[in-house]
Length: 182
Image 1 (cartoon, rainbow, N blue to C red):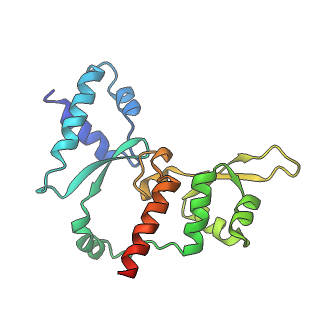
Image 2: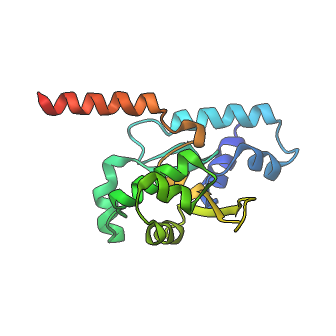
Image 3: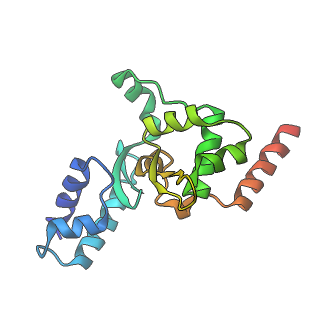
């Protein structure tokens, strides 16, 4: 167990994308029993939750990834000289349609939004938030779109089943409306 946690830490650190348990088990092979790997991973997650650490490990996009703690974001922005990527309201609406309705065609998005979405779809493709997942088996064979792993990472979702339900969204909207009237 002494060697497993540092190994997991190293693998998660060097992985350019969230590292799945399946991939970890594939990499370590028969070096350690799977149950020990899972136990060590759980312990490692707990160790990185402590307030004295600047990083934590988040389960996102069906894998594990190091993240910086939000309280250090200002200093990180200064170091990297970056400003957070912003999405317009129209882009967020279109992205929500894709996330909840995928796979979805451009025509479906336009019917739901009531406006043309060509530029928005192009932007979302460039930002790697959506991808082409195939073609619909109807005349004209329109392109079908779905979200990417980058989408899950950006919105800190373990997988698509973690998207809020319509009821949760309505409750949040009601809470926000109630707070505005007070």
